[in-house]
Length: 147
Ligand SMILES: Cc1cc2nc3c(=O)[nH]c(=O)nc-3n(C[C@H](O)[C@H](O)[C@H](O)COP(=O)(O)O)c2cc1C
Image (cartoon, rainbow, N blue to C red; front, side, top):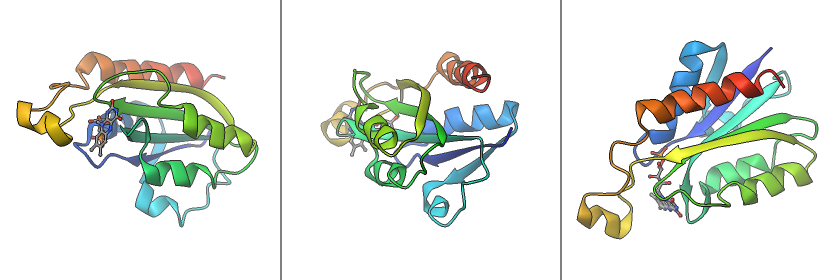
C-alpha cells in the first residue's frame, strides 16, 4: 500500500511530530504543503492531510489544497490545536466529500499554542503533543490503514 502525508505545521512543528512518528513506524512518505502542489498524488492508496488549526479550521493553505484532491481518493486527517473543540475537521471534510473523496477518519490532539494573547501568558497547551498523544496518532494510523 502506498501512503503519503502532506503536512503544514508552521506554528511550533506540533503536527509534524505526529506525522514523523507515523512515518518512523510505517512505510509512509511525507511532504510539506509547499511541495505538494507540484506532486502527482494519483499513485497513492491513502493520502493524509495534517495541519494545525487556525480560526476553527485547518490552516488555510491546507483547506485550499484539499479542494484539489481527486474524486475516489482515500483521505485521513491529522491536526493539533490549542483548545480542542468540535468541528475543526468540518470544513475540510465537506470540501473533500463534495469532490468525491472518502474521508477515512481523523485524529486531533492539543498542540502548544502561543498565538495572539496566549503569548502573553506563556502560551497554552504547553508540552503538547505529549508522548501519549503522539502514540495515539500512530495507533490511529494503524487502525485506518486496515480499512
Ligand atoms: C493564527 C493562529 C490561529 C489559531 N487558531 C486556533 C483555533 O481557532 N483553535 C485552536 O484550538 N487553536 C488555534 N491555534 C493554535 C494552533 O492550532 C496550535 O498551536 C497547533 O498545535 C499548531 O500546530 P503546528 O505547530 O503544527 O503549526 C491557532 C494558532 C495560530 C498561529
